[in-house]
Image 1 (cartoon, rainbow, N blue to C red):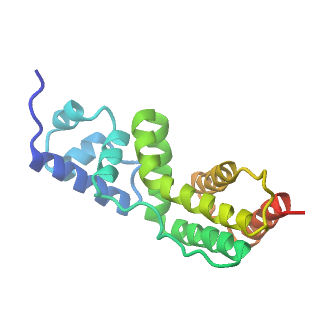
Image 2 (tube, helix red, strand yellow; image 1 turned 60 degrees about the horizontal axis):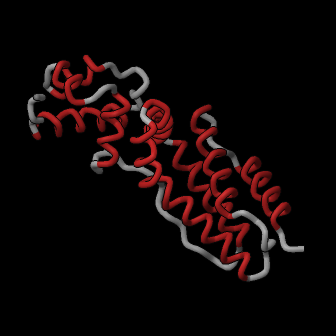
Length: 190
């Protein structure tokens, strides 16, 4: 039977992960380095977590690491709202620690699909919900075609932001304008 976790050791490991993310060091972080920073044996980490992605995931679900940029308001202008969302994402990704966190989340999702699903529900879920709600409001106002799939559009926006993070190239104003105007042209009520 596995030994129960020491809450103190668990908190120390999660705090060490938070420091590593704040320094933008997730990719280069080793279990040995994490154990040394947390003041625990590396066997303690290996006993409780299969990899560093699982530690990051637990730290995020536990609230140790901040997630998404702040939510945005909804105005009467769909294009302005979508621009504001992309601008917020771009500004968020300009900070190295946020870019490292976004990349680490992609790694967590790839390494552990169940943990990735829980993280996506907690952190991406509100973003997806905001985009869907905003497009649905525009549909109700007659600005968007009735057959526009708001959930698919939300997935595409999140995928573009994730891809930009993965490449380390936050979306600039020209790219955002191209994306938003292209989507709006495609879903506009005729």
